[in-house]
Structures are given as C-alpha cells and as structure tokens.
Amino acid sequence: MLKQNKVYTPRKITVWRGIGYGIVDFVGGGSMTIIGAWMLFFYTSYCNLTAVQGASIIGAARVADAICSLLMGSLTDNFYKTKLGQRFGRRHFFLLIGSPLMLLYITLWIAGMNYWYYFATYMIFEVISSAMMIPYETLPNEMTDDYNQRTKLSSARMFISAGATFLATFIPGQLFAIMGQHSPIPFLVNGTLFAIIFAIGVYVCYSVTWEKPVTKEMRVELEKDSVNEGSLLKRFWGLLCDYGSTLKIKSFRKHLLIYLFSFTGKDTFNTVFAYFCIYCLGLSATVAANMLSLSLVGLLVTIVAGFGMVKFGPKFLYEVGYGLMLLMLVGYYLVFRLHVTNHVILILFFISLVYQIGRATLEFTPWNVFPFIPDLDEIVTKRRRAGVFAAVMSFTRKSTVAVATVAVGFILDSNGFAKNAATQSVQTQHAIAAILLFGTGGLILLALLEALTFKLNKQTHQIIIQETLRLRKGGSKKDVDPEVAKTVHELTGVPYDKVWPDD
Image: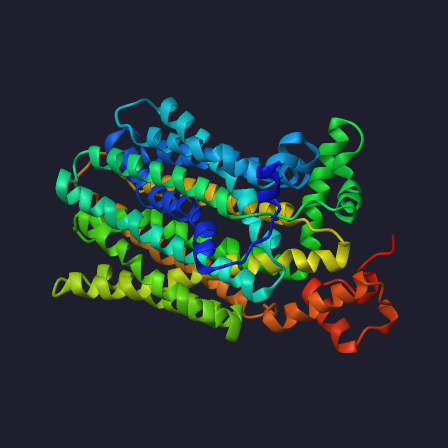
C-alpha cells in the first residue's frame, strides 16, 4: 500500500526531481545516439555484414518497435484495470520492469556473431525500450497541468538527453584512442558502461516520479473507447480508430510532421556522419567521434532554449535550430567538394559546433511541445489520452527511421560500398556526401516549412486550459468569448460548437 501511495502522491517539482525524471532519456538520447552513429558502422566493420544486411536489421527492428509503440499506447492507458497497474501505476509498472532489462543493451555489441544473432538482439532491445519509453513520455501530463512546470520537467529531460548525447559520442572517441579504432572491444566496453547507466537511471525515475490516479470520471471516458468492447478483431479495429482519431487535432498533425521530418533528418546525419568523415574526408573514427561529441554544447542550449520556449514559443526555436543546421550541412558539403585541406580540422570543428547548437534545439523543442498536445485533445473529446498520442509519435517516427536507415544502406551498396575496406571509391564518397546534404538537409527544410505555421505556445495553451476548466465546471459553450472560440478552432482544427461533446 505504501508503494501504491507513493506512485499516486504528488510532490514538489524541484530541479533535482526534474533530473530524476529526465535521467531516463539516457536511454532515449544515449542509446539512440550510439546506435545511430555507430551501429551500422559496427555491423559493416566487425560483424562481416554488408550495408544492406546491417540496415535491414535496424529497419526491421524499428518496424517491430513501431508496432510495439502502437500497442503500448493503449496498453498503458488501460493498464489501471489490472492489479499490477493499480499497485505500481499504469505508467510506473513498465519503468520498474524495464530497469533490469536495460542490461540487454550489452548483447548488441558482441562482435563476430552471425546475422540472426544481431537481428534477434537488436529486435529485443528495441521492443523493450519502446515498451518502457511510451509510458515514460506521458509522465509530464501525469505530474502537473502547469505549462511552466511541464516545461521544467521537459527541459530537465532534454538537459539530460544533451548530456547523454555528448557522453554517447565522447566516450567512444576516447575508447578508440585508448584501445584502437580497428578493434571491436571499445564498442563492447562502451555498451556495457551505458547499459549499467540505463538500468540505474530508469529505476531512479521510477522512484522519484508519480502519476494521477484514474478517477471515476476518467474511467467513464476511457471505457467509451471502442478498444474496450467486443471481439478481439473489433478491439483491434477500435485501437486503430483510436490512434487515427489523434490526427483530427490540427496542431498534433503539424507537430507530428515537424517531429518526423526533423528527427529522421537528424538520424540520417548520425547514420552517415562517421562514413563521411572516414571515407570522404580521410579522417579517423576518433576525430569523427570527437566532432560528434561537440554535442556537449547541448547542455547550454537546453538551458537557453528552456527560457526561449516560455518567452518566444516553439516556432522561434524551430526557425533558429533548423536554420543553423541547414547552413552547416552546406558547410560540410563544401569542405568535401572543394577538397579543403588547410586547417580542415579547425574548420570542421567550428561547423560541427554550430550544427550541434541547431541539433540540440531540434531535439529540445518537439518534446517540450508534446506535453501540451493532449490538452487540445481533452477539450475536443473530454479524454486524457497521453499514452495514445505518445504511441502515435513513436510509431510514425520509428517507421520513417526504418525506411530512412534501409534507404541509406541500399544507396551505399548500390554505389559500390565495400565492407571492411579502408577506403571507398569516388562514386561511393559522392553518394555519402549527397546523403549528408540532400537527405538530411531536405528533411530539415520540410520540417522548417511546416514549423512556420505552428501556433501552439504558452499563451494559446493557457487559453485552452482555462476554457477546459470553465467547461468542466459546467460552463455553457454558448457563453464562450469569440476570441477563445477562434483560438480553440485554430489549434484543434475542430469548430468550437463540436468540442466538449455532451454526454
């Protein structure tokens, strides 16, 4: 009973508690950065796999991960019906079991195994991390309704993510320097170290956070979902309809496109950057890791962006972050095409530093916007479905990343990429550089164009919250202020007279 009370007992959201919440993003920020930067390289260099074989493993696992994300959204929202969910929390139960399972990350980095070993180990880890991250991403909605408090939590998470991204790129570089960059041992040591950090971090988060108990009113609305009725087939169809209904929220559609384009672009960069440095510029893996480790600047960017989120809103942050990234991608490409040799390391470090400022802003903003999206859904449907929205975000992104990863593998192989080779042909080098500029840059540009019309910010969100409270207390929709009705329509895409349906 004590554990149950702790899970449902709100506490003051301090900086330290925010860090305790955010530390789980060592898994999101750390593991995905390492995988994005080095997994395909590890497969093609130490596991005797072709680029297509390596990409197929990553792609297939991301598809399975995406499907798991869909299932987890509904599962965590409805887990309150089980004894385990009631005792440990419908969100927190998955953190509790996820903690020791994080140690499976070690198995990804054992060299010399066959294709099916790598397929199985990567698939299992992706599914486990997804099953844990979906409930985790709902916690800001569970812990507070306040914009500033949620921003504090999300900022703490992004601060930790920035630190994890730095360590995920800095530590491998140092291990390469100590143990040699032509050995798989640094990858195994790195994987073991991070697996331990992941396991400890997830348990800390489980211990210091809480969630809302499912009230009678929330239970009534959740029970209305078609996913809870009829045969298994009907429930599955109801689940798909429930996920599809999230796309009725206009701001979520825009948010989803911004998120997908930008994060897939970032992942494309991470996948190809080591190849770009080693094969296009003739640099070492240590130098590539050190340039990626300039992500350390993300710690400062996260603090500044937190203030910018409150004062200027997400649109401003998107414009700055994406603009810097696009300029620096052009810079990387020009260094390659112009065959720059004088002070090339210094030039590349400057480009990489500015790029990392933009990348940190890219990572910070969508996950600071996300906690406010379910509030838009609540005024439309009367339901709190943070798990469903988190699942849709994870499903769509992981699906697109799977496609992008496989596409990179096919482009490399179709342009003559030679596995285990010290150098690559000119054709292969140009293909790598083109992926960096046009693949990453094209996706970032699409995200920027969508972000220019994004209108959710602190002021408009507060209007939604206040109107929801008014309606919840029995206020009449006929008494709404015209400007409030206009804002609700602009953000949700639903005419005001259609929101907050009568029971």
